[in-house]
Image 1: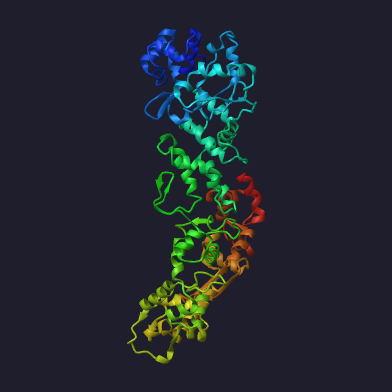
Image 2: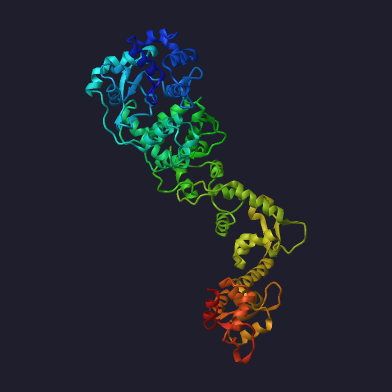
Length: 611
């Protein structure tokens, strides 16, 4: 008698005992040891069995690999991998009655000598017989190991039902998970990322993860439920950690429920990874994946433990947790978070689950308790309401929120920073000046029309002197020279008049014409619209060209430089192509201007050469 494929040691021992007409424990004693020693995989009694049955070493090794041999108090060696004893040892013994009935066909007069229990049936994740495409069924339940593994004694009680087909499992479609797990147990190459992970841990994670994916409620102990859960879990898990995290984050983000969908769906998985599986190293990778997902969903505070690891710093805040930290009503905080971009206005999640980047918006939350009203800000700065409004309009000071219903909008530190900046820029007030010429900043704006923003920028750059003639008056006590402001305003106006323009030299460089004589000839010919001005800074005469004139010129003409930029040709190649063609350079009124060509004339030549 030889072990059948995947048969366990206790099953083979029971079949041998049946063939001798004795019960299994008695046969174990005949071989030199108690049945318990066989269950422990005691080498002495295993060798005795092998010698008695004439088994080859490889047969014994294969049989023990499908049995699961103890390697400590709570671990077994199964199919070459260490597994927790929970993965295999269960009071409920499951199997395929159809397989057992087929076994019995080999000796109908002594069927118990042929009916073998397969090692893969021990795994909770093996819920289907791939050969017969049927669900496994519970064969018997027994808490005492000696009685549980006495296959001869247990099968004799249900033999008639097995042979009659009364216990057969329901037919079922095989899933990708079923194929994957069977291949892994058969030591076949695994094409998924799970190849680097332990088989039992991977299978268990798929099942536990899949329990949260099923749309219907069902008993976790139901074999059909386990089969469907493992298949559902594997359909996501097989695609890798990113797919797992993405699914969990998406399921949480789109749900408007008060209860957390992830905790609700996958609470049992999280509990298992945090409790009885916590000390199982083979589950570490799955703990890490789930922890990463959880930390993208839950507002976990620093110092809290998540799936066995203590969080060093908070990643996410919820509206509720942030409101508690900032000491503000969530109803007031949420619009501020939306305004700041931390949340979207259409986020359906309630305050307890609407999360955002804690680090990215830490300063916002830190500022909230310090915000003051407009009246308080004016008193702090020493401004009138008109002066504060002018600073706001100028962008020198900005309220930290523009929400219409918010009373406390201003951060005092912003105002204090402005006062400190003005203090550092202020000149010595002991220097004699014409007091009639020195006026408050707001008055200077009203009198000269120069914007407050420009006055502040002039003070910062050192172009405008500022005096603090009334220190107790705050901002209102700073004064500038009306004459200096008027002169500064003229310079600003002159600079702005040149904005959006290029000097003639800059224009020439942009189109590849550097000789001023050629550029002046083009101006005289009316090909370059330019104006003659006095530069406000250098006070020198200068030709100015609008940027739009550059585009107009490029649409009308080609130079080697323009060809180089547009057609990816070297400038020498571009020059050679233009000169070798049958087209003539552009020469307004007979004036030779070098390598300048009308685009419409030269473009066909360039296009052919560059294609």
